[in-house]
Each structure stands twice: as structure tokens, then as C-alpha cells.
Amino acid sequence: MSLWLKIVICVVLCYLLGSVNGAIIVSKVRLHEDVRKKGSGNAGLTNFLRSYGGWLTLLVVVIDMGKVVAGCLFAQWFLPIDPVVARMVAGVAVQVGHIFPIFFGFRGGKGVLCTGTLAIVMNWKIACIAFALFLLVFFLTRYVSLGSFVGVGSFAAMLILQYPDKPWVCALMGVMVVLVLFMHRGNIKRLLHGQERKTYFHRSKNEGG
Figure (cartoon, rainbow, N blue to C red):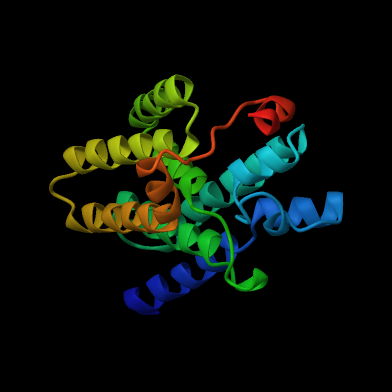
């Protein structure tokens, strides 16, 4: 089997794995609802937390983080290429599946949790720094979107600086950042106009605000 055929197979399988959207599955199986009909209409972690909260949010996290880890491990085993590049290929494919899930009408989440999980897989030290920056911005502003931009942006910058000799890693990281920004275009517009919704851990406080 040729290398390019293996890459295509890996991308397709990781995309299908990414299409297993945790928020949609948990909301339908456990709550008999579609999270996309609640709140912002997005099938991501933030909207699930705002809409339902509780321990089921942790189940969403486990599913969506687990599929990234599984995809990266599979790619590292299946592809006879640099394992760093293999993990990036899988990470982007899973993220695309999460954002545009074939099983759910191509309407999924925004890809931040997938990006964060890939950060842990790629370099846990970089991931810790990026997550710390996310938390700092979030707790100062209560804007998940703004914290996500800072976290994803810092992860991308640090990873590119770590692998300047790996153009495919840099290119794929750029694709992930563009996807995240594209999916948050509405949030960016609301932030610029001071209309972005703030997020709290307690639903009652959030709904009241």
C-alpha cells in the first residue's frame, strides 16, 4: 500500500471518528433533545454547558477528547511518517469531522476542545501554558470565545516555534487556527460590538446575566 493511500485512509477514518460529536450524542441519548436546538445552536462544549450543565458535560468532554487521542494514536501507528506530522494529520482530520460531522448533517461544534486536546498530545508543556492563558482570560472577562482565541493562538505560536523545520506541522496548525476563527466569526463580531454572552459555571447565574 502506498504512503499517499495510507494517508487518505487515515484522514477519512479520523474524519469519521471526529464526526462522533459528544454534545449531540449525549443530548440525544441521555436527554432526548438536540443540543443544536438550545442556546446558540452550536454542538459544542460551551453550549452544552450553558444549556444543561451537570456531570453530563464531563461525558461530552471525555468523548470529544477521547476521539482526538484515539485518532492520533492510530495515525502514529498506521502512517510510516514522522510521528509528529502523523498526529497533526489526525488532529486536523478529527477537528474537521467534529465541526462538520457527516453523521449529523455537517452541523457540529467549533473545534476548540479538539485543538486543546491535540495540544496535550503534541506537547503537554505547551498545552499547560496555553490552557493557563485561556483560564486567565476567561476568568478576567468571562468570555469563553476570547479565552479560546488566546489559548489556541498561543498554542499555535509555540508549536510553530518548536517545529520550524517541519513545514507540514506549521501548515496544518495554520489550518486548525483558521477553522477555529472561521467557526467563531459570529463571536468575533459580538465581541467587537460588546454583545458577546458571558459564561458562568452555574446556569442560574448565567441565565440571570
